[in-house]
Image (cartoon, rainbow, N blue to C red; front, side):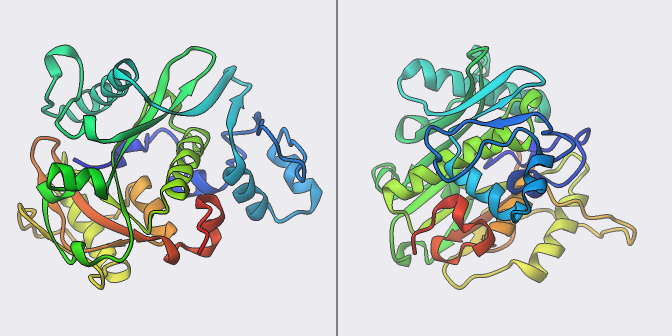
Length: 315
């Protein structure tokens, strides 16, 4: 199981990548950005305020996302702040949130389920980051990060449990693996993800990582129809084995697709592709989570220029 591509809630319209990189006028009319120091930018209360300035809205949004420290949603009186989850109590909060999302939405078979947690041997070797609602104190989003040094100590990356990663050892530069990403259903909006992504950007910069990799998941509750349809689309535009070739240890069962299938690429997977990530092979079937995991690789100096500011790719 990689990142929870089920971050999308079908009750919320619009693609995730748009919500990630452009403030949605419909869903964020009351967002106030409160960075600690932004001397060159005004603080705009509404998306309409951006538009009235005549500034390039895409540029402004990406700049705000790059600098963002916290976001307050005045409609629900929320204030979201990214943080490094340090210590056993913070880790347990992340594990509890993962359990709630993965078990509740996917009926996944999880270690630690008897305690209401999602635990495994990788957690103690990872850096955990999250987003907390400062008003309620709740942890509302989390992901974990495993770098090449910790992977060497473990003897593997998490992704290597599902894939034989040919060429991984020849990558030039440090590698960071992303995994177990999930968001509380009540907080699934662009603001929450923007705050989480900003902290990920800080980690990438601090560690000087050249590659970001991981598994993006596609639900299989429909018997694999969407997974196969999505893979057809991914092969056409995003398949690359130039750096790494990912060979699944348990390939998806074959399936004859109906002619009328409408492909609905999961939001987080779409966001990765728009950043410039590539898939490196066929998906692996994760039976515990009932998902198809796709191995993705993002080379930092190949970030899509439109989104590079957000990840502060100094290349």
